[in-house]
Length: 245
Image (cartoon, rainbow, N blue to C red; front, top):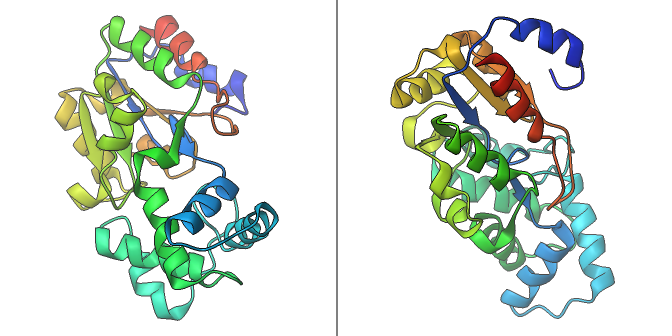
């Protein structure tokens, strides 16, 4: 993996890749800073909120396990069923995350709904600095690309807004196909759609769920963490496919 490069390179010896799969959140793009999202969500639902209050509420929401916060989700029994199905059903996704936000101190139901709208809107996302250039280079070199994501809403408009959609050949979204990473079925679906042998595929992600691709014989590369608009190390993907093709 990314944090054990010599071992990872040894795993790659002799491998030739025919296609590359990418995760979305945390790999190609990430949500805008949570404080900004809270501030804009408050404005959208008519709440007068100072910058300091927005920061405090953002910290409280992050502590509940909001997307990209790094904190473990705090799931109460009243929305546990929706949480379990969030990446398979759009209604469950909305309910799960709006309830997660609303349990933070100071978050009203309208604010939680407005914050979810930021989560699901193209304007609420930021591409990593090395995303477009990496995808563009891969396409120029003839590699087919699939987006493989656990998500409860359509990522196509977001990718289009960020200028990434034109590089994606296939969209493998969990709520559309009925399977979530790390289930091998979602990776098989991606390889089938691209028409490639799973053993000749590189999966690029940022979490252990992405490493589920190894179950179908694919290889996995995990990027590092970065702030919105930062560099996550996607340039190493280009080195891998060049050296192994």
